[in-house]
Image (tube, rainbow, N blue to C red; front, side, top):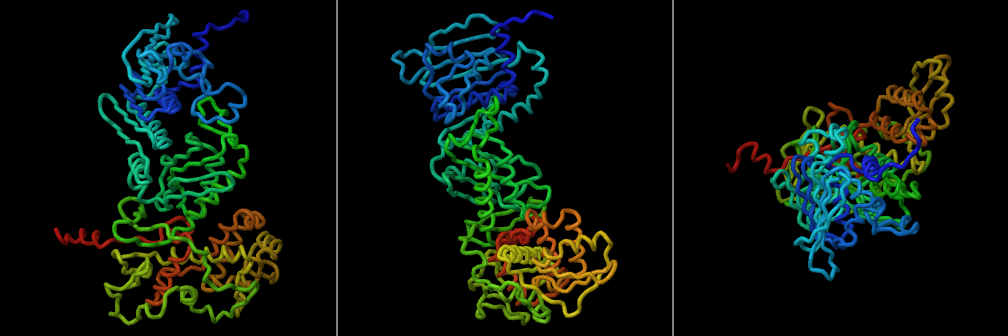
Length: 613
């Protein structure tokens, strides 16, 4: 074996560059962060051939002194920390002192700067070709700030250059880096030019409207139109930003931006909290969209856990997780169907999430279900009282006064000058599946099963949390056959099942008798309901279902208790369902994340029939 020797500095720098410089995009990220740390209010980025040929970044920050230019290219040289205490409360984006040294070691590198507090009117430029030659500093004309030019990336490390992608791919990555960083600093103006073509010009944003406009430029106008703004504080933390409505979901997680103290990160604690908040409102296989900002004391988060600073470690991850989950969960719960005045509507994509529109807005939340009947624990309801479900279930919480009820007589329809509730008034039932309603803006279409499923689901969750589930004793107990293992499973969890309103008894070998079910499910197919609950029991075990998966279990039950297709409803029943939707949390989606309603505006209907053209 060769004897141990110390590597040459240039070779060591090139090896170390592998941790920081992976591609033109990673170079761009480091340079942008340096500009922001220098207090820049404007950053101009020029890229040629996807950044492989050239990356030029100019800012109007505080600049670098002549004496510090060469030192800036040394490893572990930084102006941002000087002690261990500084490391524990980092507020800057960069602090390791490796970026410029690593970049200059694998490119033809030039840095030009003029300090804002220099007595010398001259700016200075440092050029290196990364071949180990001594860098030279020459005077040059330049405004206050810094310009960095990186040419021929990896020209002296051909093995790494072979791993670069096509020009289009590399530029797409740079574009995404600029988008992410531009969303972290609304007060800074950004521009991007690629191959002499202007790509982005993002003016500084100071007002809420300007910030929303920048988000629309970066994430697309549909995201802003289909999102709700949140801003909440608790336990020394603040979460604000925009979260997409569940119906505005994505096939991939490409529209998710999360910032901790203005630093873009990807963190498992954050991802899990967001996933849990969207758990029962997002269609399977879809991903939520959001732009969120978490502000937390710098000593409460460790950003020095990854060379590229993509990851962080929270000192109290449970507290952060609970805060994020509750803030997002409550924000999504407060979304009610509501048609705002013309010109201030939220447009939500549905179906295949392209083309068709529905309208939601954030309604001031009063106590959820505050006006509903407060059931007593263990109260039993005779079966005949629920024989007309869902009519009885709709009517008890309809929220509509008698003078505004629509008559069941055909031909009587809402007047045009009538005050419309958010979902309007029912007109008819289509194919036994959809409710058609007249709203203040046009035509509403409601999937009655999906909507009622959400209503039953939310009521059962509330009742289970309060341990006040109303039960219904079956006049004629139902006997079903089960396997030996199924019978043993049901017997083992008999008491826990009783807590959620299901009473079962053994009726001999291979048979059980169903004696009572939750009253809200009085119109369900009882045998199918119990068999589906049994399937969940066998799969997960009841202790897990009750503690961790109770929502999934209740969703299964609610699906059976919802009004089915081809069930003919009266206008009174339809209107009662619409009123229930307006006061029910998350009623824009069913338990599986599918949209429950859409709306076609009068303008859209006019275009369909070429009116006014």
